Length: 339
Length: 289
Image (cartoon, rainbow over all chains, first blue to last red; front, side):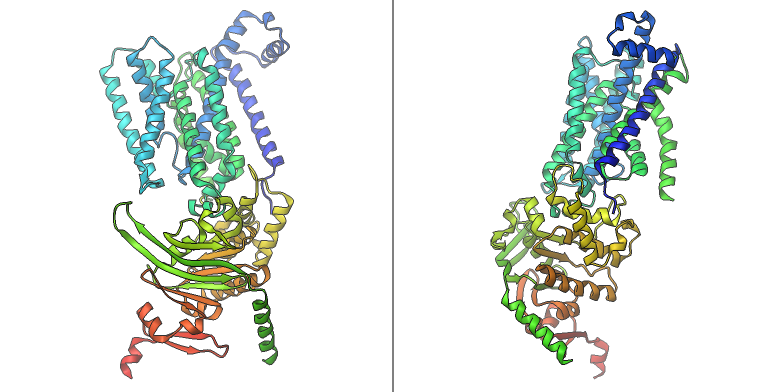
């Protein structure tokens, strides 16, 4: 008998964190202006010991004002989307569940676009609209998914898919009638894009909300393991199913709203990363959630680095990268897992 | 032959000496309806019976007779419309979900794991109601899970994936998880449904033995008349949501009654141990006589 131990959890997460660090260094190094690793280490060391005033100006601009914030945003967004995906998969006992399938991302995108139409000059309204849109969609899908006063997993998933396509149609309508405004920027954002930094006033709300949501989901990790064997069995094994579902549902939706408001609709991450982690480290949610968070961060940082460099100096939306890389990897993992 | 008789006698006496009542179902009833306003679509009439520790009770009846509803009432996941269901004097539906899981273990027909887990991991799930927060298994949990696997003769399955197990092996692991809950009452919903006859007999013999060793009360929902006759101390017979009889298999197994309930021509005879035996009488042979 080899149950999951704290030691194994820490070793796995430590290894993934090391990989993430390597990816961050790579992402800082690569770009329109290449920077050597030695220079990076020296200058990061200067910042670490509080000598940031000794930095060359171009370093400060490229590394600390452009690349680093973008990488940090990528880490947070990747973690949020992956944990949200893993949560929805457990909640609905459905390996296809993901924020996009459930329509939550579309709701957030629509909310953001509406805010842009109503008051394009107020930047804060964009993310706020996304958040409200996500919350409204969650609520709608939640009630669509209810049957005889109970949340029915299949009905919920169907409700989500239908809501997603309905909202996408509205977005299409708005985009077509609004042609002439900043359409390219909007298309980029819809595909998922990390180039627009989160407004300074929202950074703390974004970070704290994200960590709190991941923490709330992680506190139910042992319950989610049992929920996977079925709700009825989970109840008989002492899980307060209604409470766990509510906590995870709200937190996962919040994660999606925050991610979409910051970077648009980046697909495949919430579906792919938890699957990859499952194939590599098993399906115990106590390990799956932190490993997915780190894995999602790695995936987005790598995808965004590629998006910045493959057709440099032009940039691709990171969502296009994740979709292009995601589909073949998904098929490969699926086939390897079946063998 | 005679020694065996004596040993069962002493067993019966010792059983009667410490007959602590575990489960008390008293005039419990229930009604399902599509909504609060509409008429009930299914009702379970007032049902009463008691189960003592070390006792195996079989709930018998054809499909849609109310067996599963009665099981849900006993497990406390639904509260009776009238009457009461008590385990050691406490109403099962009023216990909080965690305490309930420490006292009542429920074994379902089938347990499907969405993602593969090993037998050992699966059995450790039975320790969930005792753990805190993330529930990393401590030494005691692992010891209990090991013992549970040993009690069902499945130590060798602890590292095998659940998905690779045969029906009988899977059933043993599921039973081991129930044992790891260290319950006072074990409920089984059609546990023999997907098992071949050898595994069915093995499971029921094991249940009897476990009830003896660990002082459980065991309630089994089944429609296997012969198995219930052979292994149950008490039988609760249901039909169309009504409780028809409660008693020992010998008292309940009357030919006309069973034929009427199960709508099949049956023969009932008393076996050498005083337990009834049920045989299906083929209609063909009836015509020829």
